[in-house]
Image 1 (cartoon, rainbow, N blue to C red):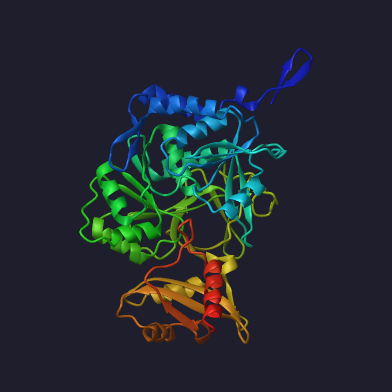
Image 2 (image 1 turned 30 degrees about the vertical axis):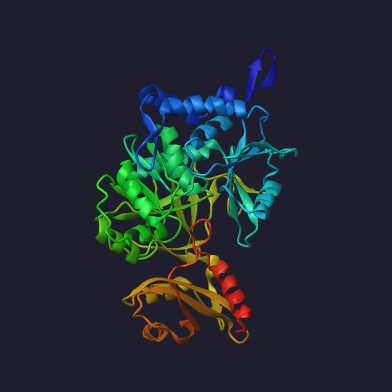
Length: 476
């Protein structure tokens, strides 16, 4: 920003003229709730009050003294109670934060360091400094880099400013009805876009209290929800399925709101969880490029797989060609790095790769553009076959993907999790009753658990690759 002094103009850092939005909201939170508990352990014990976070913020600034404005630091703290203070302190110093999972394999961490040209790494073992030149960012400089991957799987970053994160947090709190009095149960990773926006930023925005949970086992999550007094449980379909499958589970009296994101929620998982705890799971559809897009505000417990509800407050969703959507709003990030794809993300509009079905009730995700399978010249989206498989009683979960075929271009493969009474032949017979012959998978594999990646998601491209590797290993 330029400020006039006499007849000349001087460049003034934007943070001096226009304080960050989270700074202003955090100041109000401190004034109103300073000595009150802010962060809890899973057993309900208090780890930080709000004043403790502010003191820790100052301590982090001292630890980050060696870094300068525009430096990038990787934060690998995990779901640590010091994470919110680190974020505030990093922004105080004008640093660009890149949240990553702790304990990344060396090769993966090296790739992230090369991509971001990071000057530092912050982990439970300390603060480490790297001697490399920071990226010469064109205006506007990001405040955070969110790591993601493109259609080719090549790592890339999303350039995000604090204003985007603030807008997304505001949209989430108003749309979902998350208030200061709530307690968020934080078991999904803070380093992921979903965890950061639903768990960390509401604490800074309005003082919504936070549970730092580090044990992802179903029994530990159940007990933590019970003992911590959590009122809001953001999770993934896999977590809800696991907690819903527990034997001898007790009612979760304090929990009032369950939110599922990261993958389409199936009716079977929703039905199972509701039957066990009497709690409806609300689907949340979002993306790292813009945060929240749509949310299921209804009380309906019987909804089709992939139902995402209506656009969130503060978000404009436009229907475009080929059953795609475009997202507009203050939450949309500036773009990708190192290679810009302005047609997909340009700071004003984001076009997800999802295929959307619209109805009077809202949006429903039926797949991704890149997942379409070409079987002998006929195109089918795997979600069509998956939905049909889930209609067979005893089928819990189904994932379908394509693999290369010498005679049909591609063949369909189905991974199915089901009751022991279901056989491969039963699955194939069911497909013959309702699907065209070319839509029937050539291979069925019955699994006890679905393979997911480190983000708890099922990636069809990864499944196809590992399936082909398994076939080659066994000489098939």
